[in-house]
Every structure is written in structure tokens, then in C-alpha cells.
Image (cartoon, rainbow, N blue to C red; front, side):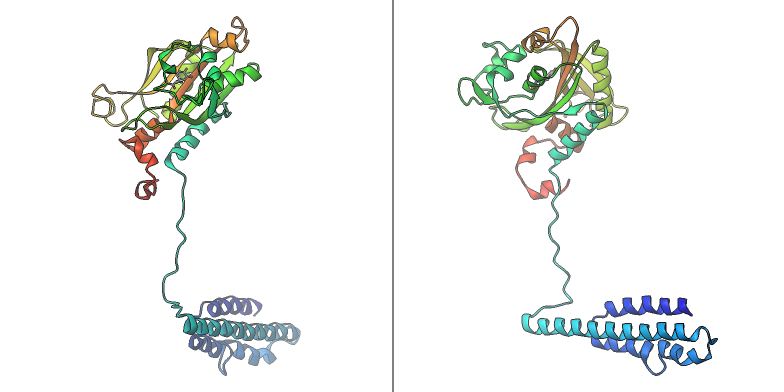
Length: 337
Ligand code: DAH
């Protein structure tokens, strides 16, 4: 009997709460508390229960009756208030609700988070550096001499002789090594600036992620392992990777890392200029001259470094052929992510 009362309670209270007019409320009242109502009948038969159960069940049933009556009264009040408002304010309760527009993370933020997470799982720690940087960290400490073409006014936003907007995230390498001793395993994500005019593959601001690992016995083989694993996590697990000899002033030897074209799977298409390969990373073994600038013992320590462009990864992942789309703030574009 107690179970039956509980069941009635759950069903009836829920039904009352979802009524939308007083007629429905009255129907419920008659069905439960009317002359032949479900609860009325139970109350009438209590006298036939075994003597020892009567007081308890009687109390429960009467309490439930009061609870239901109170609930009906309260709901009636709510319905009347809503009705009055609808009369005064012209509120139409049958209209669908107004949803708040839901925001989402920018696609570049999403890819940056994913890339950081992949390296964090490999033991790299995220560090940050300033976007307004000294010429010293952006160039000199990285073995880029004063007459190097990268220092050209046309590529770099200078603030004055010694201060500029960083053109890459590599200066964070020098900043970290200046204050910390090896072993070191860091990644540095952030915005970088170049005085380029915009086109399908250039914007004056974009994002890079820098990586640096320094310890005893850090090898080029280790670099290949880390970057191959990264590429296969961020793209398909069976993506082919190739390391092509290259030059950067702050690494020796240096390499550019290509992945098999994600569009044509290496067959050759417009995206990969029919080579089957796409360049995605710069990397190499840290140049002894960079270590000398921060006072590291080049006999004891070796290191590797790498840098990658986040927009490039995002364009390949999402199949986007114009980098400017990320910064036009067109909601029709952004809402797809
Ligand atoms: N800083 C380079 C650029 O902006 C990218 C880069 C290349 C970073 C090689 C590195 C590296 O750490 O080893 O093009």
C-alpha cells in the first residue's frame, strides 16, 4: 500500500507541474481526489486494512491528500499569474523560447590547444614570452647577425632601434635558457607579426608554436621521433613524414619537415603544387652559438628545436585555402567550428 501511495505521489505531482491550464488541473483533481478518485478510494478502504497498519497508512494517505491539494493550489496561482501577464503584456506562451546564441572557441584556438596538448603528453611544458620583444632576443641571441635579411624593415615591425614585434616564437628559447638550466623540455605558443601584405597564405599576425629540448645526449633521432609522433597525432596516424636539409641561423644541422599531402595522399594536387608533399615545420639541433649566448656548456649539452605555424596546420586539417578567413570574423565561417 505504501508503494502505491508513493507511485501516485510521483505521477500526480509531475502531472500538476506540467499542466498549462486550469481545466487540466481540475481534471487531475477529480481523477485523484474526486468522489471516485484514486486517493479517495484508498482513504475509504483504510478501515478494511489490518488493525496495526491502519494508523500509519491513514496518516500517509491524508498527508498525500494535503500535499496534492496544496500543489494544485500553487499551480493554479502560477497559471493565473501567467494568464494575467499574457493579458497585460501580450505574452504568447505558445511561442517557442528565445535561445541565447552559443559561442565557441575560434578554430585557431582549438588547433593551438590540440597541438599544445599533444606535446604536453610527451612531457613538454608550456611557457610564454612577450609579443613586444627586444631585437637582442628576436635576432642576436639566435645567431641572426645585424645584416641578415630577416632584419629588414620590410619584414619586421620595429617600434624603435631595439624594440620590435616578435617575428617568430624562437626568442622564447633564448629567454628560457637564460633563466633555467638543462634538462629542459618546453613549448612556447603565441602570436607573431610580420610586415607582409595579406594574401591567401599571409596575414600580418599569425600564430606559431616553438619547441625546445636540451639535455645530455639529445639527438637528431630524438627530434625525428618527437616530430613524427606529433604529425601522426595531429593528422592521420599513417601520415608519411620526410626531413629535408635546410638552413636556419639558430640550428645546425637544420631541416624542414614535410608531410605527405593530406589532400591527395601524395599523388600530387594543386594544394601541394603537384609534389605530393607539404612543408609544415622548421627544426634542427640548437646551434652552439645560441648556447654560448645563454652560457650553456656546449660540451655537456645538446638540444633540438622546432617551430611550426598554427594557421598552416589548421588550414590543412580543415581544408581551408585562404588564411584570411580566420581573421575576417565572418560568423558564417566561424560557426562551422
Ligand atoms: N623561427 C622559424 C620561423 O619563424 C621557425 C623555426 C625553424 C623554429 C627552425 C625553430 C627551428 O625552432 O629550429 O620560420
